[in-house]
Amino acid sequence: MTLAAVDEFEALLAPGPLPGGSAVPPAAVTVPATAGGDRAMGGYEAADQYDQSLARWAPQLQSVDLDILFDKPIVDARARDMLRNDAFVQGGASLHKDNIVGSIYSLNARPSSKVIFGKLDDTWEEEFQEEVEEKWDLVAESPDNWLDAQRTNTFTSMVRLFVGISLAAGEALAAVEWIPEGRPFSTAIQFIDLDRLSDDPMRGFLNNQDTRAGVRFDKRGAPIAYSIRTEHPNDVSSLVNTDLPVWKEIPRQKPWGRLQIIHIFEQVRPDQSRGISEMAAALREMKFAKKFRDVQLQRAVMQSLYAATITSEMPTAQVFAQLGGTGVSSDNTLEAVTAYATGFLGAVNEYTGAAKQIRLDGARIPHLFPGTKMEMLSPTNGVGVGQEFEQSLLRYIAASMGVSYEQLSRDYTNTNYSSARAAMTETWKFMQSRKKLVADRFASIVYRLWLEEAINKGEITAFDKRRAKTLYTRDSVTGISALNLKFDAISRADWIGASRGQIDELKETQAAVLRMNNGLSTLEEESARLGGDYRKRLRTIARINALKKKLGVEFAVDQQLAASLSSEPTDEPAPRKAA
Image (tube, rainbow, N blue to C red):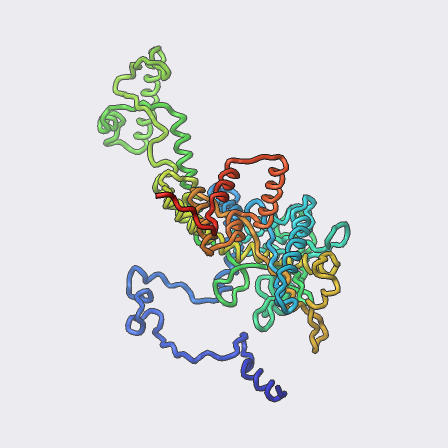
């Protein structure tokens, strides 16, 4: 291809950037001055400004950052408060971790030999998988917590933490550190509180056009650096430390592409700089539901303190007449009420003090003061916790957290197999999407960072250190080597997290067998549904079978299998029976 042809080809693909990063300008659209509410111009009833029920509903049209960034601090604080103090919300967060990550987050390496070597090599792929997975598991789940810069969490715990932070704030943040001292691998992950991701005010006064809420962007809107405050704005040390706060700007990645900052969130609109919690839409209802339960609990406690009350049957008009309710001033009325109450209560006390039968734990009926009666109190009076009103609030909260009402409330009283199965399926779909968007992305990034170091250190024998240079491509203009698609091919991986769970194990196991027998699924996929690695399962089964054979142990299922194999039809024709 000639140089002129190349220029023409590039011109066709890239006609030239416009402000904001757009390559091709959108078609001009003339919006009438009356748009957005005049029934004569538009066809949507939702935009009708003459509808009295909608007349006061006039939200502002503004950018996504203007929607989020000013409200994010208080939304984050309220979400954390609910996670700390509301058992249902805290349980919903645990459901996210348990349904996405589970007890262990296992690597399923899937390198592409076709991309790496130019041809398919199943043998090499199998060798690479087994070696890398074993070495990764030793590092990731070591009780020494090598991958955590603070040496606090195993890799599974780190993923659970990342998922929990993402639920509360709609995003999560971590820095990649290089710690060569006293570690088998220098790669380590340092979690960063999102409150520390903020703009340096000194830099902001000079130039803040390219920075939003601690993130600096290039001209196309790609993040290139993060401004991290060295301490939390409200920390214990801030009570005694009077020094001015310090910010440190960290580039997103090294010149050759190795990440230094892990910042993951799901965009809901273009040009969104920071994430916002999905719980924000239900925080109001969460607070009201908690307040409702508190009021009901206080009511039940107060009623339980009093077993009975004594009320008077004297007519109201007669009482006020005796109190001087007509023709007297307010001062005289107050004096009359006080004198009557004092005298009445004194007479009741004197009367009941002499009546030895008045007691609540005996079987006798007490003889009360004339004109009064006893009413027994029950702590169950009124609407209790768990009734329809609270159920509606919990359903609202469950919807915002992506779980079913039954799972959030632990209430299965009105649930049958079909409804439980449907609820579990919907929850599973939601959790799988969050697993892919949050947990898998974080896990894959950490795995890629570790694998790059392991290959360059010569720790992976299936991919010799001398081959490491093939994973980098030198830029002819800048002279900088950068990771290429071969690194993506060798670091490709799936992640096995929490099992889906089973309501009826027999039916669901039969369904799994039918899917495999009819080519609709594989042993790998079905094992992953149960939260396990099929290769490890098969190796374990082989060891168990070998040990059973060595010890001469047979189970009933072994005898049934042997009988079925011996009765299988052969190619020889069956002998004819005599007539």
